[in-house]
Image (cartoon, rainbow, N blue to C red; front, top):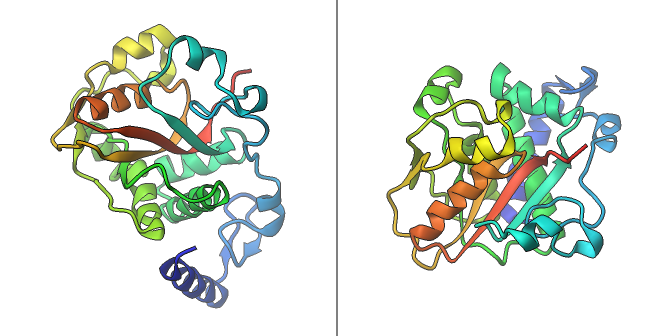
Length: 238
């Protein structure tokens, strides 16, 4: 953990003790954003996982889907399963403007990355772009709100304006897999030379991976040598 992160977290926790807050899950008074009991019950993503897409796989080897149709991204780090209460917290950030949760998500990702041995695979961080219409509706891009403190904590540059979303189709969650691929095609534009850069793309939730895969395809077209997904939560198949 960096000295900067240690100092800022200590200061933040001291302020929280002076101004107690409610646990974001159960509502009980807590010195942290989640009380100890709720934090202990979080659906952390454990067990053997495919290192590329973070879905369950035998002995941390590539899953069958990544072997038969390798995606454009090279790795995925996910902290939680997208299940209660994580889904509740993600929706609170996105739709109820609970912006302090973005820093908590960033801390959770930083801890997960530290546990796996740091961040040797990347040298910059980039939030998944959100369309101007969605930003207008929400007032912010939740991926950027998570990426900013995460990049700062890890001492990595944040490429917040290198890419943008230029096409905003139907919501991905409403479409089947093949339709999602077509819906997201050519949705992004990159204005940066990424030659040789190793990029970590930050987002809140990875569902099928179609959006992140299309974004990774674009980054590699612009020279990126490696693309990793750093996501707060991963949706698992039923």
